[in-house]
Length: 125
Image (cartoon, rainbow, N blue to C red):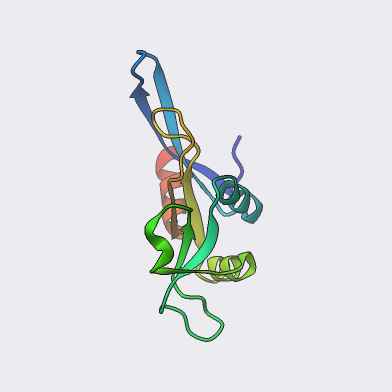
């Protein structure tokens, strides 16, 4: 059973080239340790969109991965800054462990927790 901090948002059946079926899951969590581990395992780091923050507010949050084009638009921030803003804005982390091909995925998105609650209700009723 999944905790309230982790929610399976969607299950998609995808056929592989070898004819086997692979189920890819999109999950949602608010667990700071799980988010940090997932991001760091993929070489990512917390970031903010340049020019969107003021004072102690880092601005619009993002995850920056190596070899992506975020160098000109993103600035690194600490995990503390990231999670402070994450909690202040009541965000949830949407992510996928593997692609439909079964390889490690970097798909992630920050979303509103209220949306997560509605998605959970829709999937359980």
